Amino acid sequence: MNRLTLLSYAVAAGVLVIAGCGSSPEPNYYALSPSAGQAAGQPPAGVKSIQLRRPGLAGYLDRPEIVRRLVDYRLGVAANERWGEPLNVMIGRVVAQDLSQRLGGVNVFTEDGAITADADATVEIDIQKFEMDGDGTVQLVAQLAIERGTSHAATGARVVRLSVNPQGGSTSGMVRAMSDLLGQLSDQVAAAVRGV
Image 1 (cartoon, rainbow, N blue to C red):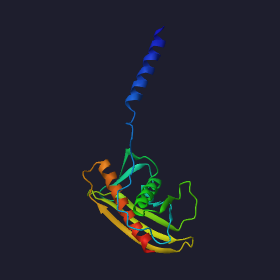
Image 2 (tube, rainbow, N blue to C red; image 1 turned 30 degrees about the vertical axis):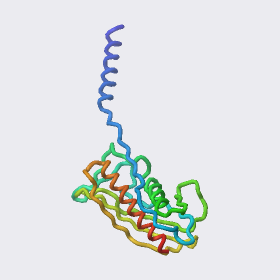
Image 3 (cartoon, rainbow, N blue to C red; image 1 turned 90 degrees about the vertical axis):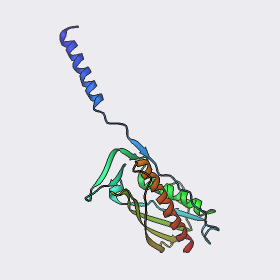
Image 4 (cartoon, helix red, strand yellow; image 1 turned 60 degrees about the vertical axis):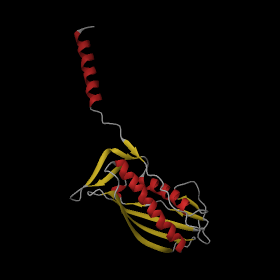
């Protein structure tokens, strides 16, 4: 080989080494989980199936990265800490599982799933805030509406504000606290379904 060829190989190898050193770390993926709760007696009268509409989500939360609120109105987004699936789809799936446990005997299905049957009641949730703030408190603010039958008339609507202090400031601790808050939200949804 001549010197020019050797020099070309050396430059190419150097570029590969530099490119390898500059790669970002593999992201960590997180998932919310159902939270254990109490089944509240008999199913609501006349309600055998509930459809959970895809939850609405504030635009700043609608991203793969996990959002934390920092000081001075700033949001923190860590590029290597991400949700394992779209957040609104995951919230819907987890709340549906929570409701199935709390409303024993009622079939709860999501709008995103394969089931398209008419439901006896429809639950709508709009998440306005779902994050850990600068003080380390995880907060959930959501609007909740329940519709009975196919009338699309809301029979129960309210704003729900929940918060919890997680153990430690890790992302895993925050996600566990968020899962607990969804369980508490599901408790309120189950009570609202029983009341309409």
